[in-house]
Structures are given as structure tokens and as C-alpha cells.
Image 1 (cartoon, helix red, strand yellow):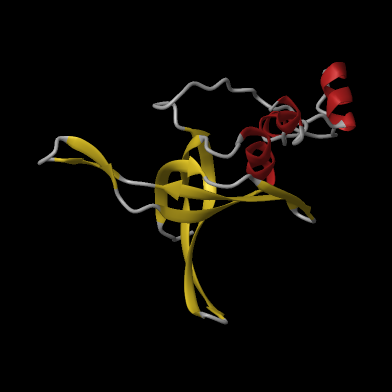
Image 2 (cartoon, rainbow, N blue to C red):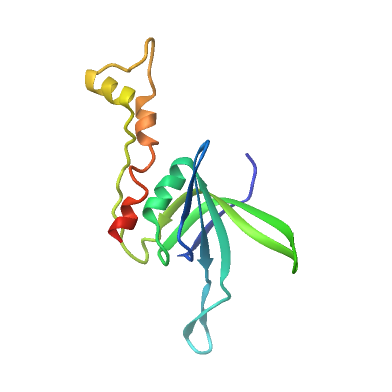
Length: 161
């Protein structure tokens, strides 16, 4: 698929909004990106103008994002850039969105602890216990399912914070 891929480094400006949809989870939040430059005359760092992007995530990434990100946290977002225009009462407005492929904490500004998520399905769990693949005539794709499962509880992080 063609598209403009971008990598943004900034801070979560809003809480992650999460919704369950018919095709899986959907999450969005606003990312604030402020460039910093060294002023050669004053030898001080100065902030440039802040740009805001709406970051969208789907399915497993959406679920894990909602369980992992809070306002103000430094993030690195990689995804497909989408520019859209809307007609509003106050005139035409332009919005810049990023459909995320990957989101992570910016480890140049702090530390993080990664937790692998394993989805539990009754059929898969019983197949793993019995040592079979749970299907007749071939590989069930169990390893793929295990590595792509959603977060156990989206509300778990909110309870800890």
C-alpha cells in the first residue's frame, strides 16, 4: 500500500479514547510535537511552534495503546500520514492524522518495562495443554495468535495510576 510514512516524536496531549468496534478496538489520542533548536547567538535551547496530530490505532495496537499510554508521556509514533479538510461554521479547516503502525515510549526521556500480552482462547488453551494443534490436518497458527493477542484488561493501567 502506498502512502506517506512518518515518524513523530512528541508527548501525549490527551488521554487515549478507546472504543470496541465490530472489527476490533479503535483508539485515538492527540500527539503534541514541539521542535527544539539551539540558538547560536544565545547558546540556549528554544522551542519552536507546537504541532498537534490525531493518532489513530486499530485492533491489537489500539487495545495495547489504551492500556499503556497516559497524558504527558513521551512517545514515538510511526504511521501513515493523512491530511483531511472539513468545512466548518468558521470556515475550512485542515486536520493532520496519523494511522499508527507502531507506538512506543521515547526511551531517551525515561525507562519502560515491556509486558508481552497473551490472548487466552478456550480452544487454543486446551490445544496447547494437550500438545495438539487444535485442528485437523495442519498448523493451527497458534504461535501467530499468541503473539498478536490484545491486552488483558484495558482498565488495568487506569486502576494503577
